[in-house]
Length: 123
Image (cartoon, rainbow, N blue to C red; front, side, top):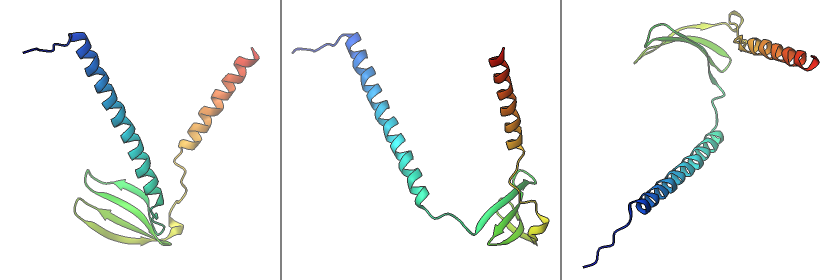
């Protein structure tokens, strides 16, 4: 009876290469699956009549939301297992600007960076 014995170094290299190939295959499979799911979701029709305008957290499990349905606005309450209608709101009473203040902050930082770069270039 003959026994084939591999050396420890050769066996380790084979195991490493096998694990590397399996990892590369799983990584490629994940990449293409995510791309396919993203493309599929883009083709799905979006909600054109429903939009969450603003959300306010009241407690850990309760929220108030302003939602738009068509051209009308409503204030609703959302709990863990409940959804309550509070009132209809007038569009004139709402601040519907999308400005969160972050755009202004980023513009200021960008302007400061440009000024510093210009100063370094002149000296």
